[in-house]
Length: 159
Image 1 (cartoon, helix red, strand yellow):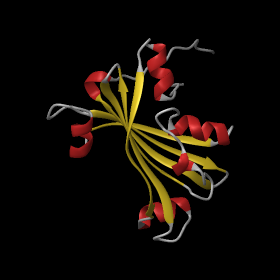
Image 2 (cartoon, rainbow, N blue to C red):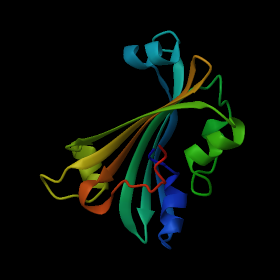
Image 3 (cartoon, one colour):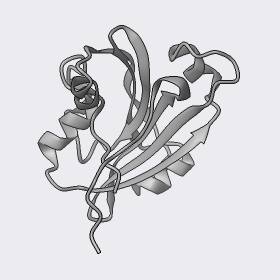
Image 4 (tube, rainbow, N blue to C red):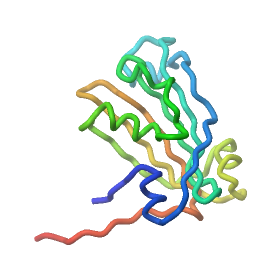
């Protein structure tokens, strides 16, 4: 089993210093694919945010997410320089169902620019969906520079 923790906790475990820069935080109309995923009408409002997380000043994670205004109505009023969106959601939802997919990908040009990556460098991309029952709370994409991030775990194997 692979443990995936919030970026602030991950950086803390490495004895680093976390900082976050808010690139986008607003309500936007749902495009068709997101409307379907959230179970809302196309054009219905969803909360869209983009955060750039740094470790000791170096960009380490580009976080893009969409959140349900019905389930997290106060999302846009949060100070995400003090609490990450993921940590904020954990204060509201104690045991949501989480889906994760991890893949290696070439970054989008915008992602490459914000993460200060060289041309041709791949990313690790974590797709996450948080659900409450069958309702989508949030859909997130976390981009990590391939040269500055790794996933790992340790555990005791049981027969």
